[in-house]
Image (cartoon, one colour):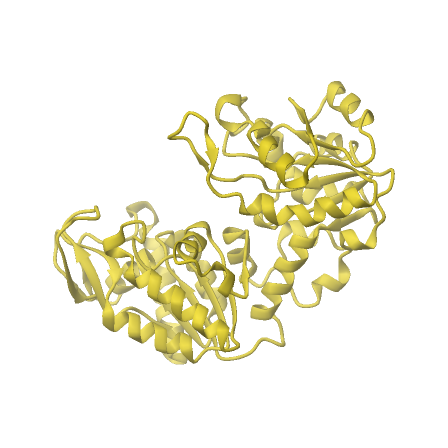
Length: 413
């Protein structure tokens, strides 16, 4: 990712007057479906895209917005996966009406685009209603590309995907492609962690329960991270591999067991030589998975059968916070426990406060992942972090020392 931003144009390099900007955004926002209104519960991704859209509008340009929403997997499910739900909020943010197309390719879409006037926006229906999107189909990408004069990628959060609208469309735009202001910030923030000018010591904190999505990331960061802190459900497979008893805590599924165990062993051995891999010392365990379960504190290596680890305890909190306090660069992805349960949220809250305090004294902090950002917002600490990333998965993939497909496709030849 080093110096990649110098090889990519941004929206500030173009004047969009009388031009159609085909803007790939990520409006795949969470929706509270417990209510009949199906209200958007977190509009962060929409909010972050507004500056780029305003820039194009201020140039007297025309905008065609493309995005995915949910996982319809090529099926037409307008009841649960229609992007129409975005219109009221987006219109309110931009203070202009938003036009909508029931499809994203076809003759009617072409007509709708031709009818666009300067400073108008047309939102196309969910890209993933077409299986060709996730397949990276070139013919589908070309049909989309033909709708715009300039392509803008403002969807960092899916730029690790080799999908038609992300990594294939750019090839049809030659020099008339660029990234948005959000994408630029995401790349610059990652460079502060991964680039040559990063400030050491560097601490990487990984929690949550998705070990499959993060275990290869750990392999990639061993060489440059001074401290790798593993908590939450991520910790228990490691502890079990090291000979500890983790009771009924999250471990590796049988079908992934041998492959994942080999990677775990490799990580433990490499980190033993560098002495940069750290686990909780004690954990809060429960006899069942709910907020009012009976709980007690034990060593993470000695969890009785029938009990499960749901949070880090006081010694672990101090241990992790001391390391964070001595760090100049901090990356955090994944909660340290089941923070949705108030009785098992202290560890995550404490880590959030420690990172905010470290940021206040001058450290650079980068935080990503929906649950992680939610935990910061609960404590009203989101504005005390250097940068909140919109893309947890994309951000993690960036740690594999490879340029993301969606970013690589934007490099001008």
